[in-house]
Amino acid sequence: MKALTVGQVAKRAGVGVETIRFYERQGLLAEPQRRASGYRQYDEEAIAVLRFIRRAKELGFTLIEIKGLLALRLDGEATRSDVRTQAAAKVGGIEARIRDLQRMRDALSGLIAACHGDGAATGCPILEALNGEHPVEVPTGPN
Amino acid sequence: MKALTVGQVAKRAGVGVETIRFYERQGLLAEPQRRASGYRQYDEEAIAVLRFIRRAKELGFTLIEIKGLLALRLDGEATRSDVRTQAAAKVGGIEARIRDLQRMRDALSGLIAACHGDGAATGCPILEALNGEHPVEVPTGPN
DNA sequence: CTTGACCCTGTACCACGGTACGGGCTGTAC
DNA sequence: GTACAGCCCGTACCGTGGTACAGGGTCAAG
Image 1 (cartoon, each protein chain N blue to C red):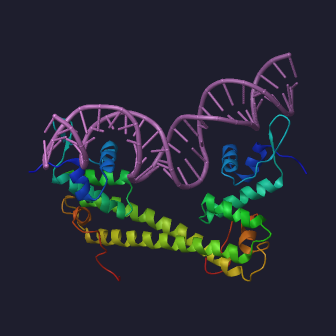
Image 2: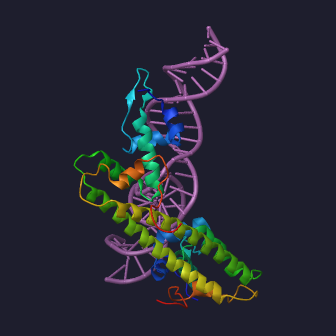
């Protein structure tokens, strides 16, 4: 099995060299063997781990969570149920965030609809809503 | 008009004293008058501005954007169209973020559905997908 | 045997929105 | 008059996910 330098791994995994060192410090990537000179020596597995990290990031996992997933991946004791639990928790978090953003969008869209004409900004419903005493509310639509 | 200390303003606006100083440094809150001792002296308008900031934050605006909105609020030249433009841009950004999150959720939900049983984590479709060569894809549903 | 690309370490820096702290002055109530 | 809360300033720190740099050592080609 050919030994790879950090630069070769970085290129093949599509990340920067500094990122690899960063992941190593964060405990996401195991400390590799070293040559006598101190150079890091990697094998193909390191590239697999880096790709795993990239995919998990695309799915919205944080580095901390990815660290947990990587542990499950190598842990012979871990069950599918453990993995599903992690994934389901993430879905819950994502959905909560989506609902937050939808509320913002609805409130803002409502204000935009209420603000017609080209007059002075003074009195514009958007600014008025922000000036008001009460939390901004969605003016129309189902609750 | 009664002069307020920074602590009184903080309490009435529901923010910390440090936050007020921070907003002042960021240019969101005008530098107030000072007493001979150097103590900041505020009026009711400062509370209105702080509340405005809080509402705008709830709608998803960043501090930079809020700085722009506050300028529009006080600018006699600004039109409603200017305000709507800002708000519409924000809605667009929020919707893009929602679509991102929905893609993540759909991909992850699909993987969870594909991962049944209670066996060892090895071979679990979720981990397999993360291990794979290709970007994670939503296995079912409309594209 | 030199040049240039690569690697090593540690540290500082970016955005974002604050929060906390140290050391010192002030304002007020008792 | 003294205690204590409150204010002042500057600066450092939090989490998140890296990126950049300085000052050196190493490796391979020519």
